[in-house]
Length: 76
Image (cartoon, rainbow, N blue to C red):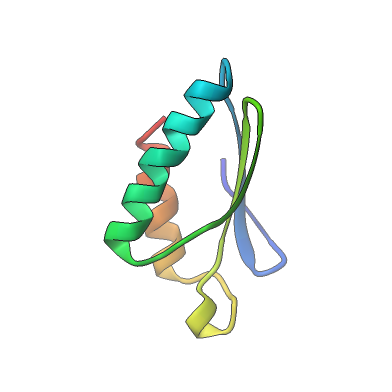
């Protein structure tokens, strides 16, 4: 479940290993690029954390973020 906090949507993902986490990040990267909406994220071994906010709207959560969050959830 995505949490709205500090003007961004946040979600923590955990995978079996680094390869699975990296594969997920690759899918998210392609999705983000095609929608021209790029997340802030971190990766450590099997964990991926993602924050979504719309930078050109003043770093707040917009419909663009909500749509990307739904699309990201479909990748898991």
